[in-house]
Image (tube, rainbow, N blue to C red; front, side):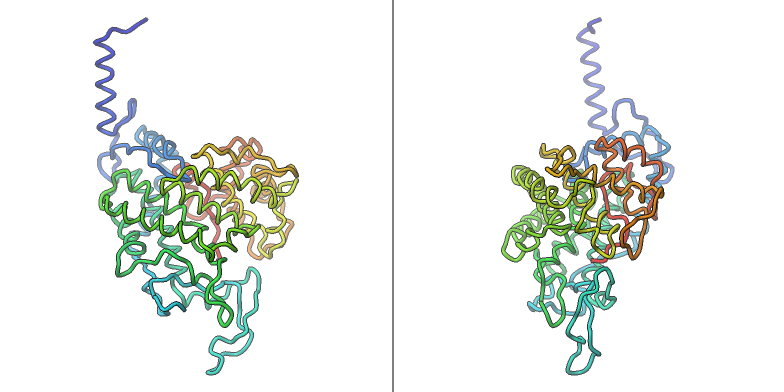
Length: 431
């Protein structure tokens, strides 16, 4: 039956009021006893990996009292609370000055390279250095940029999401402080380059391979700033503009000659490079460039890396083969998520050998579900490392992965997937 014009107008005014108030139609604004009245539902953020509409729907479901999401929110806010008293971090904190002479440059040391000689006055580094794959040299921690960067990335991501779902101002304000300190405050900012990433003493003052220090997690920062852009307290238009400028400068640096070796890498380094570049292109307003980067990944990444059975031969040859297989799959699955934003469907692509991202995830399932031992070299097997990539494949329509979800091991701190549905590297990253 057709409704009359007065009824339609009344309905329209009601919906408009709900949208302006931030409360979705049909949602109850039951108070969150921890944070007071439930915050308004925020707009869907313009994220580059995460699905902004999905975040907004999760927020609506929280308002409606979804008990499972409430439990996940408790895990998320527990992590966010832990970050409130930490930081800010800055590249200016390190005791060393990078080889280029500017302390604002990021500096890190190759984690798997070790001295071979005793340290002496004439040879203070113990050179020459040799590589021990998968075995981390603790000396790298004397340079604080790598650790500070990792903590800042994780803190900003967690705090921003916690603010989005709770409305608690302290979360957003601390995330904003961390971002300004590392990226935009003239006294403490990092220059937008990685010229001195993963140095090897007495061998090189910086390597393109050091770009992995950023690319493995930097897309989380891009999504965090998109979340803050939805109206976070303590986050201004000037903050948005300053970060956007840093992103543009960094993307331009990635297009230079120094980064070429990393762009051409045919293992996880190349995949992470593409993931970071595509995300930056999308975040800085160039979806056409992001589309081209993701499309090229079919032949440049999926074709050479994934075998017919789904194995990743180059990662399986490592001393930490499970870790590096899940590591590469984090990049592949996040790249696929970026592709969904620009109309490129990597999840449905099968290479000429018969390999695909879904098949690569399925390759992990016996070990990821505890049904079988991992049959390849692994110095530190942690079953939960694969949990997020399995969840990603399940969401993408992989029924085998979907059936495996209930058998996955939750990572320390809880399973945040329902509120943070994008794959993260869940076990520690060595470098």
